[in-house]
Image 1: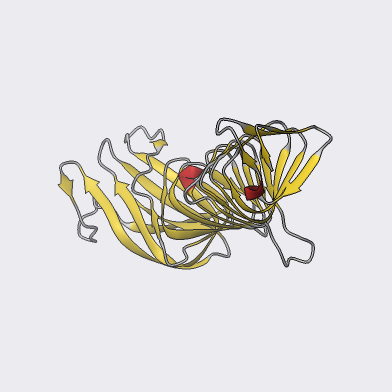
Image 2: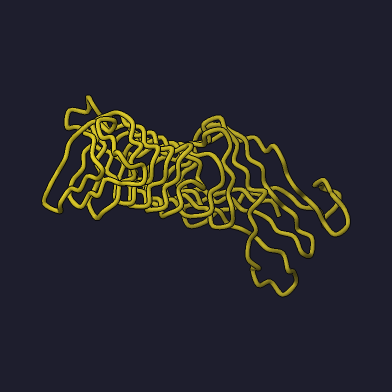
Length: 274
């Protein structure tokens, strides 16, 4: 279809392969106020309007989509929607298929019931990972991932102060980096130390953790609190343990030193360095 512009009315629909639409003017857009279904191909056209774009086949998006996107799964599960996004999606995204957002940006909220691969910072809205959803995350996370789904570390995942995961975090042979998170003052009259609690519904798999335990006067530390039923094997790769003017190594002979301890209660357990 070669046009200067394409408009889909609020009661209208269009089903097509993405690369069968070639707008003559590079500044033009597909104005979708109804239903646009892309069955395959590569989309290089901006999509605007109040409608919904549905991905029902294997599609690559290189453009800006300014509306909600639904990545579908057929009833027989033989052909799921499969979207590789290298552009920007500003609407809400509902994924029941496969979404690779490694080199793209989604500014709207994401609800995942399929497989979603992304750098965490490229998902700029709220993230809901449903029970049958699988996230593969790298990069830096600074928000809550809600839902009972599984988040798999894809190489290395760094937690900032607001990072928590309600479902399962699978170490997946990767590295969880807590060194960059900074907590809030716990209000202890005897110290100005800041402690960050990161809560994980369940921790699974095998991997490496980098954890901060700087308990100097202006320092900070991390606590990783995981739910009961967790079954994970982790290696402590880096421990930033300091006190005023010195770097120290925990030892039984120095009571002022810091120690790794197990914390628990209310059906949860975890590890902190205090």
